[in-house]
Figure (cartoon, rainbow, N blue to C red):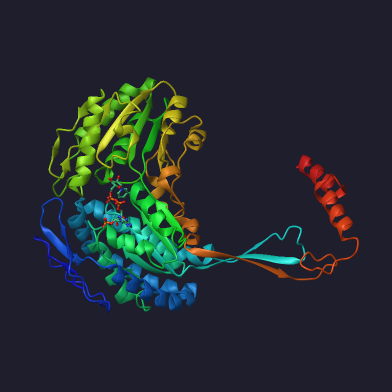
Length: 525
Ligand code: NDP
């Protein structure tokens, strides 16, 4: 298996990967990864066949037995070495992300920081999140009831290109900390960072093959989703998510889907307008708008609309695109540039006004950030995932109208609300998995908050304790601690069993003494 990384033109050589080669014959086809900003060759990876994917899964299966049998403390020690090696390689990793994805180096380094914070959190929380819980045994009072959490085995992580280390680490870290082995399929646009992660894991974690990478295009991902893995954690488009779920249904493999978004931002009339505008610009344009939780549409109440729009335009005009100190880097793919251009042209054709940027302000992989007003709900830019540097702003008459329009979407990933009075109630009215209050995208950085969406944004949760338990199987145990004369698990019942059960129903739920006492108690407290 030949995985090569070309030395960057202006920095030191990054070296070749030394992942142990699989026994299958090496792939003939390779993928070349080109820097979206310059077109230079960054490296190449093999296009792995279904047979190679299956071999990786088999190695992971063997690894999962050893890894899953370790104590949390032992896994924590191994993952701590992995974390430290990533931290020590942060410049190298940021440089590689910058070169294969096109984002500015600073943004790439922040991504490494975010990935590390999740790895650290998963290491520290796994034991508590997976601790067995004693639960009420209800009417089976003679039982001890316990819920336990155990590793699933092998997890497939299929990742996108927009955050090549942060996004997959949101699943990889939690899956590993929960005692699973992971087979990671990175996007064909950004596989080198995945290869580097597997290489770091191979030299730091004592259990071999606990984190492997399989490279290739969609077909390699499809092979992984049909393999014998125990769960698939996918981040990417809704269309591919549906295909993966269909493929997984053959084996009833559970899936966790982090899909697209069309995040709305609502600005109430008592919001801090300057801060809201600043937040809108960052939320819509960070990573050149290529984030699943980008602010993709903004609803601003009439009373402050003009001030808000003027401030947004001022802020956007001050941003620099491209260059070492640019705020926005190159778009990762020309296919994505074409989608953004199509959305902008559709908006203009339907009457939107361009205040800066626009469909003609595109050159190669670079798009000038665009502010659109007079947008309506039927435009692509307000309905479909744009995934580019666009700030569409709609004027609304009230917060109620803003909530109605925000919720008028098939997506429901993140959201943002701004205001003072009743702002928390406003947040709760937005149909989305996550909401930042007087901020944007903050929920993604808080490691203990579960991350995920509703509707066509997918289901399941990464991050937080929920993110650890996503990669476990739940085991319920019921243990008899003493015997009762009326045993529900025996045919040897007393003759008057029917009357006794009937009496129990009336006593507990039918207004009997116990039920009446319970009602009275509830009324007092
Ligand atoms: P995809 O959803 O197609 O790709 C995401 C991952 O899935 C990649 O690793 C891809 O591999 C893999 N994949 C593709 N086809 C299959 C398949 N049949 N079975 C299993 N895995 C598969 O995203 P795109 O890169 O095509 O981007 C398209 C759109 O998705 C964007 O315009 C954007 O709207 C959205 N998107 C959303 C993201 C999010 O975080 N919500 C992230 C990225 C994109 P490969 O790259 O090798 O084809």
